[in-house]
View: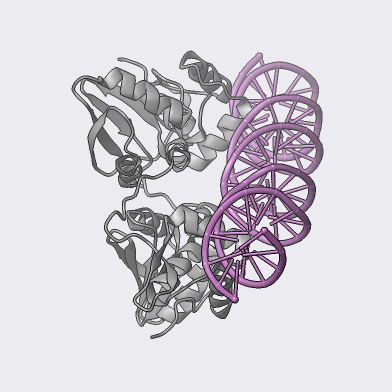
Length: 162
Length: 162
DNA sequence: CATAGTTATGCATTGGGCTGTATAATTATG
DNA sequence: CATAATTATACAGCCCAATGCATAACTATG
């Protein structure tokens, strides 16, 4: 009994602590930690983790997660998942897009957005259940909000105006 | 197109801003916000939100979310969901249980635990991808960790010791 | 107590994510 | 270049959350 999050965390640890040169080897290492997975699964894990094969000191190529762009660009897919799971509401106050989330979740959404490098987003800040997206000057909050709303799969213009 | 989070957020807003006396009425209010749901769904939403019917000034009974115990005890079910989605690893250093999560998610896990009032958990603190659970004096971190691990559905003793 | 109104829930359906199998595509090696 | 090794992926199955429908359970009212 294992979860994906646990397995991927283990994968990240393994490849950082030892030289892993093939999927098969990784599968074996996981097994030692009593985590069962197939080559296909670790292939997908490595991709999601952004791992790449690099040449090591002794000439082999081993997997590693790029250290210097740890905030590698997250696939749109992952962003969509996060947004649709955690976004409660989107409002606009140009050039700011205000996103509300369940309590304590704003940070998760914000960091997913930060990593996504989507167009028109200049930056974010997050509180507890609210976060701001600042739209780039020539893009506009409206357009950004529409895009985010679409990704989140939510109905726009939700909140009733007083 | 709507998400559960958005709908429940809208439900919370609606019942706080107007007197909602029945599910049917709530369904209608949602519809005005272009959120489609049935009575069965709002029934479940109200339960998950912890809403109760209270008597208002004018004698009707209307739904409301208890203000003073907003952190009502979350059902074990929800806790299990959160843990199995976000817990990457669990370690023990008595009386502390150390839980690691994906980046930025520790707070979410911690607040879920806080609300759950599970046995043997004295308190929590959360960083970015790590959180501590302090076990109650006579309970012990080991037992607590075992319980949490089971809830999370993860393999214990995951991390290799150096 | 009977009836209408309201709320909860068993059941079936749907959709999506995750995973393994099998195999295709790619890369390395001799 | 041929073959072996490695990696990626199409496909199918499984599982679980979410939801609607139908109806049971419950509540209020006269």
